[in-house]
Image (cartoon, rainbow, N blue to C red; front, side, top):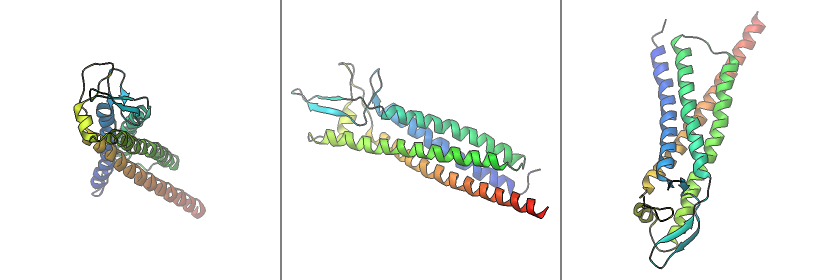
Length: 204
């Protein structure tokens, strides 16, 4: 039987997991769609060997694996938010108390993922700053170069949106904040559960 306060707890918990899901999806989608180009999905973060040719075209090397790492972490974030959301909904809707080991698993998984997400968001921020630094050394605006498009092996130029990339990275950082707070909350719940169990054992 769901108590009066239970629907609010369910809505709040689902809201947290929804934010986690959306942040991961935006981070993943923005980088996958706008920070890569060409049939081989060349990454536009941490470009190197940048040169401006005589016909005003630019050549550079795009060999970084940072985009692949960000996409992987974003995918994990999407899956985790769904798993945690379903698990939380199950326990709250049934008013079932989670075992301490279940809460600890939530806290540990959230902490580990937060560390992975920290690396991913840092790679995104530093990588795009690195790339724009290279581009702007030649006297052009980074956003203009992205808008003009990129091509691989003389194929068709595909325009990219720098604003979308920055928004995706911002979503990654915001998602990190939510995951850290969630991990801390679960850690506190785990400690409270252990203390409650310890007190119950001593009382009996």
